[in-house]
Length: 443
Image (cartoon, rainbow, N blue to C red; front, side, top):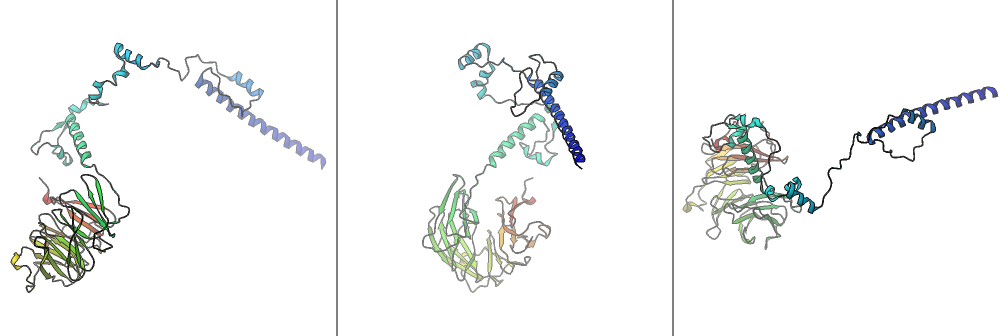
């Protein structure tokens, strides 16, 4: 047993020795390769030494025997170019005057005022012929509607650059945030360039888009409302009408930002709007009656009638000829608003709607006329893809668009552009969908 143990220990020692030899051999090969690459990169210079690496005598002999012949001093892969000798500012100016130094010439006044030349000029651009009429997206590049001649590549590039520069100026914007005010309503003050922003807070903001100034109105003096989330602005930009508590309509002067007057109605107010001429203000709410005040005659209530639907009024819209009243039942009544002033205020007369639209199955939360009053948009926030458009002169609802398959989502806001060329729809997903109305597009 003792003899067998000695033989086994001897064989283990031999195995360890062979393993160490194999490791040493692999290490020598790696060292040789590192030395060869170092000499190839840095020439005959001495490579940086690494104190943590110890080389055996046998490895050093093998390196010396297998090392490649030294390279000539200037034949390395990397050479130091010493021709670019640094000069002082005085020497540089002298060289610029005597020899036309390129570095000084690049900073001359002539180069600063001259246009920067293109980095690449394609000689084939002049041979290119492009017709602006064949591609719809290129028609905007025409200088006039009568232009039919094709352009070459050089002219096309110039017009594209000019178009891009003009678009960049038009798209310049200023983003601003109101961290203390969750925004529920926002509206322009006529053509003044000011924007009124409010929410479920007792204060509101007026932003001057021209000057980039944001003013905060901390509170309406004399009022205790904790929320000013619903309001309407007059088309002339002079008056802001907030919906207050207990049937009050609070009028605020847009210029001084001070309280002007209170208008009172029975029940609670749910909707308020101005006529296009800013002479009258209309409101309605829980009692189903529509009230009209004349802002020129001491803010007197000059008309009041009951909506034929008989339920709570949820939305109002006025054009130059018609009044649209939306109710929580989903019925939208269209009334003739061209009533002589002597007939206003006759409560004995029962006002009959000229058209009752029943295409909405839930509350009519949004009603909006386009600027010329020919289209009435109606929608609800409680049903998906439920917006409808009414052709007011004929009293018919468009059946071809939008349909139940139009991906509108839950519509929360909508409005027309000033020329009625576009319709913007905001939904519950935070997206603003922009649709083009072909009837109002220029040929």
